[in-house]
Image 1 (cartoon, rainbow, N blue to C red):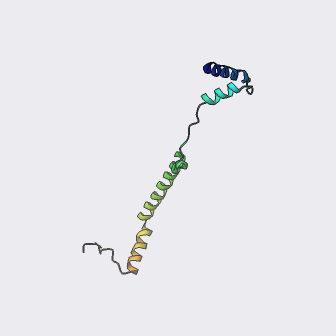
Image 2 (image 1 turned 180 degrees about the horizontal axis):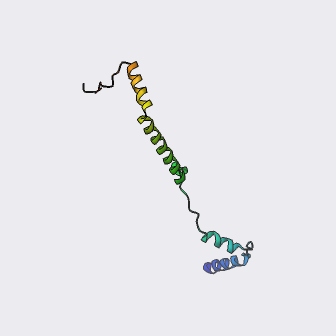
Image 3 (image 1 turned 90 degrees about the horizontal axis):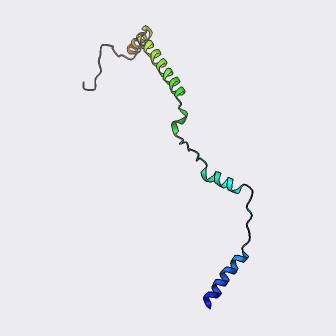
Length: 101
């Protein structure tokens, strides 16, 4: 008898269930959310601003500075200024300095 009452109560619950109204295009929106392509995350690094164009410009500047420095070292003005500096401070160009001496 008790089982029949439980079955009857369970079936009465189905009578109280109402129809749920969904918003328009609910299925479409849900499917788009489920199967949308995930955005690829871009890792941000410290060197991300150092683009190949900037690398090439930096390399050109370094080469230019090095070529200019080599030309200045090889010029006679540089030798004259070094000789003048050495004579002012009592250093001779023939004297070699070494840590072991």
